Length: 476
Image 1 (cartoon, helix red, strand yellow):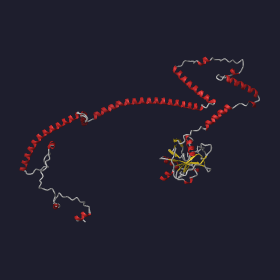
Image 2: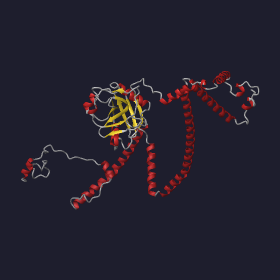
Image 3: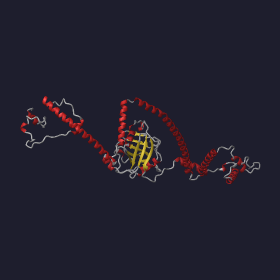
Image 4: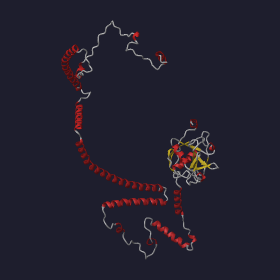
């Protein structure tokens, strides 16, 4: 497999495809296959593959997807028409985990692609190889080919593409295109604006044209005013004065609180701004789309602010409840401690007291950096030496008495049996000295080899399992 990876060119561009099986990381050969990679990244950026299924599975061969219809006959490229295949001499379908474009017999590509589940040399120079699956995500991709299939190689369990995230975009000039729905809406608005009445078709067309001219003139004069029959028609019976003056309409019927008024004013200002944006959009300004997006973002912000406030209230309530619970549990702990003290025995109490003493002594001890540490050690040595001299005087008297007793026993009994004698005091060990016998220069410490068999000090260091040693002993 190592020679395969060396022969393949370096990749430039990476995409993470999130599916129901798991994440699939795809690296792209954008330099070798620019048309296919540009088409794939553009569609991923626009969310074209989101929600699409893998509609075709052939075990140990391929897994195909990328069709929004799910039939295998749909899918469009970003170009005006489908584009041709791209081949490279260093890119071959020689292993699993490769990504290629699904094309028909005519060799034209759209949006559909496939993953290889094994080496597929039959697809070389027939389909565009533009990417490969990398890392441990290869095993997630292989799970797609493990499902059972029905007619036309359709899988019985449908696996979907949830989302595609672009990790490394090699084409910096790619921008998401406008959706078709937005274009249709704009075209409808323009058609409504440009539409004119064909009054010549009516039997009373001339009169209708005159009335329409009058209406247009009145509209130009009264752009900011309200339009009614009183203003438009030149009839003496219809009065142009208002039945209710504007001052009475604007004055509030009841005086609400100051806070309510401020909230209402802020709401009214928001509504006015939104209406102005709607009017601008209706007039056909290019800024309409941007302002519409701003309006949607404002609504989302308001919803998020409300949710945050609710969460803050809930968290505050939870904290209060936790404090109350802690306060309730504290007296119980104190009672448990009192009961534990009662259960303590005398031995445990003594043990705890000793512990406390040792801790206090440890606190009193000076640190190694303290200059008083040397004085403390010297005082301790003096105490030990003073005790040592006292022990010498006591032990010297005891030794003199013990020597006399031993001599008397030797005279009366003979040799002493030291196994039955009592052990010495531990204090005598501190003063005891080991005196080695004097060496005689005439006596040699070398052992006589002739006395090897007779002497017990000699011992054999040879391996008894060795055949030569066994022959010497006469075993073999």
